[in-house]
Amino acid sequence: MASKKNYWKSFEELTDNTLNDKLTTNEFAEEIPVDNFLGNDNAMENSQTSRRDFLKILGFSTAAVTLAACEAPIVKSVPYVVKPENIMPGVPTYYASTVFDGYDYANVLVRTREGRPIRIDANKGATYFGSTNARVQASVLSLYDSDKIKAPLTNDGDKFKATTWKDIDAKVTKALAAVGGKKVVILTPSLPSPTTKKLIADFATKYPTTQHVVYDAVSYSNALDAAQEVYGKRELPFYDLKNSELVVSFNADFLADYNGGGMEGDYGVARKPGVN
Image 1 (spheres, rainbow, N blue to C red):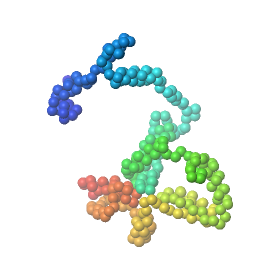
Image 2: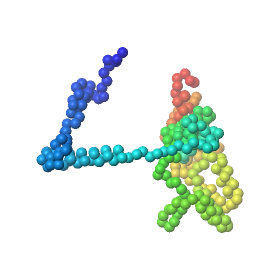
Image 3: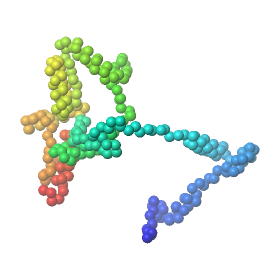
Image 4: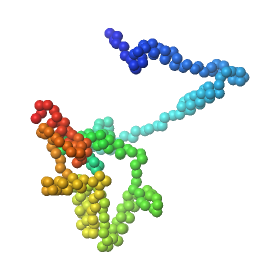
């Protein structure tokens, strides 16, 4: 049974139900008189067709011929000779991972297809930081940023030039071998990864003059100092708000990236009636 409901695309069409018919009738209000000069060499001189109309027709015909002559590039799919055991074409594979970019920290599930990450979701099974915000979910786009640097750079006078990791490793190894008793400085942002910290500690064991300097564009030193004084540990606190009845915030956006974020999920649970 056909529906008798009427749908409008705009308030103007609702006000005047004949507007659509008027627009359809006058869609091409200015008709180009192509018949005046097609098929007759002298007709163009005697016609009333303007130079602009002639250029319109000429441009359209040129574009049409160009498009008709174009062929789409051939893309060949090469199957696996020996298919990896954990990859099934067309079936996504998920990996549990973490994200830390100086503002956000989250336990995530990375969705991949044939080894290419295509989506980041929250890891609901994580005890803490099991939620993601828009920045975390969009971070996968940086992998496919065509403008990002594709190779390491070295300073060549006033300009930077691309090089290879092999050349960088050789240059750094040579410089470290000749360091003697001079100080070696490793400059990093805050690192939550125990593995990275262990690597830096091993490096410092081999080169005793190494100094690890931590610098963040957005400093958390004041918050760390306050945590040291209140809790006895110089660590950023994470608050479990699931059972909270009242939260008072003084210039702390705990639903965004305060102390790395991740508290908005627990706050949402506390806001549900009948949960507590």
